Each structure stands twice: as structure tokens, then as C-alpha cells.
Length: 364
Image (cartoon, rainbow, N blue to C red; front, side, top):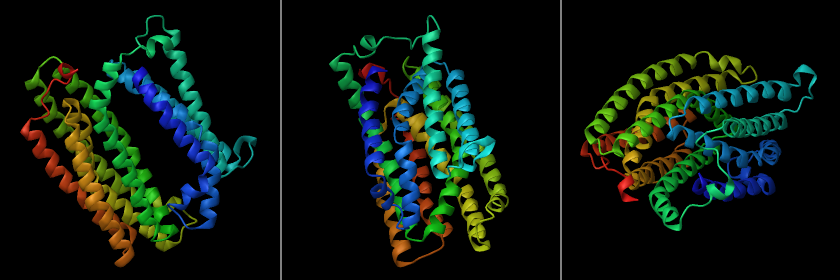
């Protein structure tokens, strides 16, 4: 926990400062619309401190899962999301006698929800007498230099992997922005719809990582391989169900956006359908890379594959398409998503090679 906090605090501070001091410059990377830049800047200035609270909430959430205390993070996350949703409804539209704040209301709601989320974690951990995560600051930061070096050595590829992927997604939205405000709005809505289902697979991958990591740590490689096969099958089955639901929602969700033109609503429907069609390979890759390969320390392979699939294939294809062969947003997303198929094949073959069947603990 101390090592995680030592890394999380500086990075969350950096992002908070950048978001607070240079919001317009940041939004300009994604949008050229002056109105959108103004709204985005107002949102970022308010939400900026939430990155710090979020970093520590994640720290407690992930650490709780690794010691098999999974119910508390789930309940706290549900509470935080519920508070955020209620406050959004209250502050954006001025309900229940609250002022109508619009975008600033959305940012305020998120900031309050993140603060409450962290406070609940603190209350839970430090009110339980023998909670494993209950510790003083001196104890938390009493780790040895060697342990820090070992964790950094093992964790750096994972960190790089996440940065590469996150930046890649951000750059893809920069590409989508060249198709206009309507296109990027449609892409964002479609992403929100799929993210609802992706959050479920984040849980699946976390469970997969904990279960496989535990048995690898005691040299039960056959059991780890059995878990990997089971999780792969479970993921494909669940992703197929989720895909069908997403595609069904494509015919319902656009109707909620009455302020969109008929053409934009049709574009949104097609974009959600495309997102649903590629949901199966996307979720399979997520569970394989995060849940299986990382458990055995096969992090460098994940970094290299993400680098190739996102930065060598998806991003160049996206920019070439929007700049030289402009197509509707759903077609661009479909073309970019073909990289998921390549990742699926590579990930499947990597799991079959069994190089990830390794006791990472012994390497410390």
C-alpha cells in the first residue's frame, strides 16, 4: 500500500494541477469548438481535485480485493455511483430546489461523490479493530528500497501498458474530433453505453487475476491453467450476452436524445451496434491480458502487443481514414476495432504457450 501511495500521489497531483491550471489547452487537443472548450474547461477546473481522492480510493479498493475482501469495494463503489447519479440529477438540472449548474453541476457531483467514497473507505478500515489494511503512515511507508525496486521492476511494464492504452484511447478521440462535434458526441455516448458492461468485465478480470495469482504463488500451475481456460470460456459466453444487449439498446438509447437531429440519432444507433459487435473480442482481450497474463508476470508481452495494436495499427489507421478518406464515425470505429481481432489471436496463442505459468513471488 505504501508503494502504491508513493506512486499514486505524485501522478494524481500532476494531473490535478494540469487540469486546474491548463483546462482550455487540454480540451483543445480534442475539440476546436469554442463553446465546447469553454464548457470542458469549466468542468475540469472543478473536477481536478477528484483525481487525488480517486487515486487513494483505488488504492484501498484494489488492495482489498487482493486479500479476498471483495464485498466492501463493491458496496462502496455502488454507493459512490448512486450518490454521483443523484447529485448529477440534482445539480445539472436544478432539481429539489438546487441551483441549475449544468456542466459545472456534473463536475461538482463527481467531486463530492469521490470525496465521500474515500471517506467511507477510511471509516470502514479504521473502525474495524483488526482490519488488515488498518495501518499508520509510518508503517505504510516502511518498505525497503529493495522491495520498492522489485515492485517497480515488475510493475513498470504494467504501468507503461496502462499509459500506452489510455493515451491511445485519448488520441483516437482526437482523430474522431476531426469528423466534427456530432461525431465525437456520438462516439462518447457509445463508449458510455459499452463502459456500463465493461465495468462488469473489470470485475471478472480482477477475480481472474486474484484466483490465478494465488495458485501460481503456491506453484499450482495445472490449477492455474485450468482457471485460465474456465475464465476464457466464461468471458466469451458473458461477452456474447452483453453484446446482444448492447445491440438491442442501440434501437432504444438514441430516442433519449431529443435534441439530436434524426441523422445524428441514426448515426448513434449504428455506432452503438458496431461497439456491440466488437464487444466479444474486446472483453476477451481484457480478461486475457489483465487477468491471466499479468498474473504470471508476462507484462512485457502485453506492453508490446498494446503498442502494436493501438499505436502501430489503430491510431495511424484512424488518422489516415478521417483526414484522407472521411467516413461516418461508426465506420471509422469499426475499422479501428479490427485491431482487437489481431490482439485476440495473439493473446490466445500466448496463453497456449504457457510462458505465463510462473511463480512471480519467487522472483522477489
